[in-house]
Length: 283
Ligand code: NAP
Image (cartoon, rainbow, N blue to C red; front, top):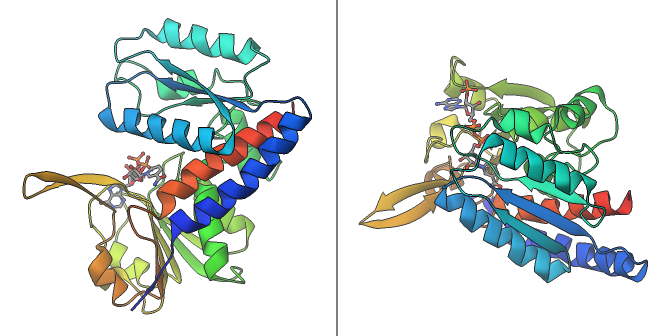
């Protein structure tokens, strides 16, 4: 049976060290502050924002919450971002995705100053990651790499297969894994022979948003499986959260596996706090 990677416990340790850093900054007269912008009617986004506020409060980071709602005009979101860019008391800005359909996430996120771009999603920060320059790296891939480092003393030479190529998870994670000298295969919805390729993976990271898509036929015995997916399904009339991986079946064959919930999710939020502190330090 696979060993379970307890993302919740690892995230708690990380949060403890972040709390200590926040105290040091406070003593130096800097109060790390994160602005959270929500312009959608997505109920999950509201939940995620509340989680982020809770964790921020627990580590001593101040938050400013801007709930603009699903009818916000693009100009309204743009003006808010410009105001926050100019506000010296704000160190980090997060534009929660998804946005309402009429808004362009790419256009709006690019208005965030790269020095306050806490999830590393501006074109400048993404370019820095891909060209090996220092910058802000997206939170979820940082969290995944952290978990992988705990399992594998040496990542160099391992075959890592990343399923999903979004700008927020798959692509930056593939780059981080390349940076630590993994052999990386990035799969997407046009990829052929998915199952066969996944079975060659020492490390399999799933970020496609398809409930329990990955079963044991995709897994090389002993592989490390990281499940990024967060999917809401209905079971017996109530909503259950599951990942992209069929946890019970895959646990029988994998070496290590991260669960959903309590795997990557808490790591993402912890790295959001980590990036906020990093941006506040640069101030
Ligand atoms: P996304 O932007 O929708 O991207 C999904 C990716 O999966 C795309 O690259 C897509 O391929 C690929 N894909 C979809 N169906 C596929 C299939 N059947 N076979 C192979 N590839 C397939 O999603 P995302 O934002 O990266 O999020 C992915 C999942 O992770 C979601 O469940 C999301 O909720 C979750 N998530 C969790 C966290 C966390 O902290 N735990 C953070 C972020 C996201 P194409 O590019 O070809 O369309």
